[in-house]
Length: 360
Ligand SMILES: NC(=O)c1ccc[n+]([C@@H]2O[C@H](COP(=O)([O-])OP(=O)(O)OC[C@H]3O[C@@H](n4cnc5c(N)ncnc54)[C@H](O)[C@@H]3O)[C@@H](O)[C@H]2O)c1
Ligand SMILES: [Zn+2]
Image 1 (spheres, rainbow, N blue to C red):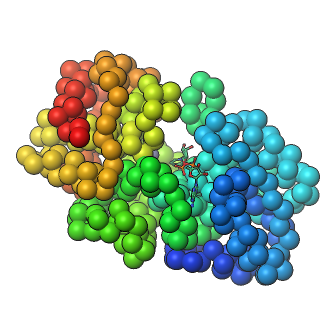
Image 2: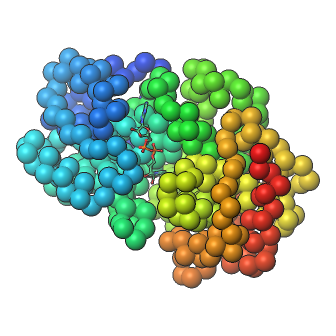
């Protein structure tokens, strides 16, 4: 990840590389005190390997577990983690390490970014979504009762270690949620990745190690490229929101329970693709091609019977509606993008309604 000399960091991707974390940390940072943040589920699966590796390298590690679930990405939990950091005696040279999905990663990153005005954070993402998206790029956040990710910071990690073997224990719907983001990268930025996904859809769906690694690597490269050109989301980084303006509205209508984030993004991406076709940005057949890929990857595009009008109104209330203008990212050909500012209500409603034709 290239952010100029001072803040660039390595993203290491491989299979079975959790055991290298001790040596890597020591090479990079010397002898820091470490606080490992995780949740009980992930810690029971992978905690021992990480702790053994750290201790084997002679590093002191304390453990802070948070409960599992998006509802714990909260200010209250942030406070508890800061308490843990104080109790563990972390210093400016200490390191906070995040072992888990995006929830653990966002909370641990936030804690690291404000403890003693900021200490280094090492991310060890264990969900597909966290590996291809949330662990890279430096955004951290907690939720506010009035909205998701409303409070947060930018704090780039010192190192990201991605062990793709950890995905083998991930629940199917969580894996699918990550795939929604993977397809997003292909559609918006990288036609070759899209073709690779088409070629290897079954292998990816079955989590074949080689395919998963190749796909994760490409996604991390794309995210790094985009973030290094626009770290604080003033322009280009916005294209990563493909499908998200529709998706956030859908998630909210289901109170963040009925439709998972990645599924909402997949549905939103298809809506954006339909919109693009209706505007002449996609050729005949390309929407079908995108829908077919989602289907082969096993991603459900089932949308509960929400009214199109409510989805549309939710989009207008999205926090990303800057300066009161609605910006919708659409594909321009597969592998390219455009940003539509304030699309007319009727063309948005039309795209939302047309999704029904692609549900299966
Ligand atoms: N910071 C960013 O740039 C960014 C980007 C995208 C999403 N996010 C955030 O990420 C969060 C979603 O992350 P997520 O989808 O990883 O959800 P999550 O962290 O809740 O993980 C999903 C579930 O999988 C479990 N799990 C994690 N790793 C596992 C493994 N290897 N085996 C078995 N189970 C495992 C978790 O305990 C949890 O129950 C949201 O809060 C979202 O806002 C942040
Ligand atoms: Zn997303």
